[in-house]
Image (cartoon, rainbow, N blue to C red; front, side):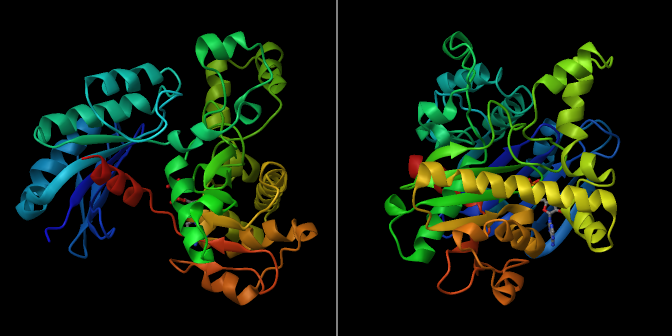
Length: 397
Ligand code: ADP
């Protein structure tokens, strides 16, 4: 049987991740990242046939130049890959209330993604650039949009409504949407398999902890609450985002301390979180190092991060009633035994007890249960958003 290859494109505001996958078994034949868009050192890195490569894209290069390079240089060097492509899957951050699952892209969908761009002004336009460029380069191939928000569209009104005048929801769609849906969906499914249960009968609390982070309560396979809101700023402590805070801080900064709204926006999205607390780094590895050396800022960053996450986990017992597993995923969730241990120690009231050995082996690609036999289950599951995007794309063509 011919393999079914899908090109997966993930256009961020200043980067582009790409991969060619066998959509049936998840084998990755090409993967890469173009970054530092619009800067002098815009560059592209990729891995193919087990070899790592890198090239400069030229000062000021962005999505279009990166895609051109990928098509005309990388894929062109291996025509048999390009020839076997059956579809292109695009990660799109915001699908509003319009998209509850992945869809084949046509003119109406392009217009729909454009409409949702008011809710994700940095991300949706980037996805549209990727879609248009891919349509131009691969005119014959079906293109599929996979939305980060789609999985969360099953949340009930009590979870997605903000307690503000409802006119804002009705007229402007202001509500909780949530992100990382593809990742939460994937790891919840994998957890069900690992537990030997039906996904439709499995309740998990999924913690996706990367540079951005969010946590989702999954009841009977469906998202019923999540920590990101209208935008990715709400919820957990992240690399550079503050997560939850008193909204009156914004008024105080602007009205009394002379900040502009643009400065506050930049502060809360890019200067806060682990970076703001540690005054050192947004990278969890650096925070762990500092924590182990007793650096005050890093200790504070670590404690606030774990405490906030543990509080969220505890609160998600409310919609779930029964929790089959806590899942840790994303760069931090998959690698930081320290954070997992500290978080679960906050939750001993529920009976969680970390198995030190299992916790240490579930790193750097390792996975599985990290709690002691006979105690409630917490587990590590590496996420694979690209695989979900590729299999959704294959399923739709
Ligand atoms: P993104 O959200 O950009 O996809 P990732 O899921 O790759 O990010 O997660 C990046 C985070 O994972 C960074 O904070 C990084 O420090 C952290 N991380 C990666 N490896 C380790 C490790 N061995 N120990 C602790 N944190 C790690």
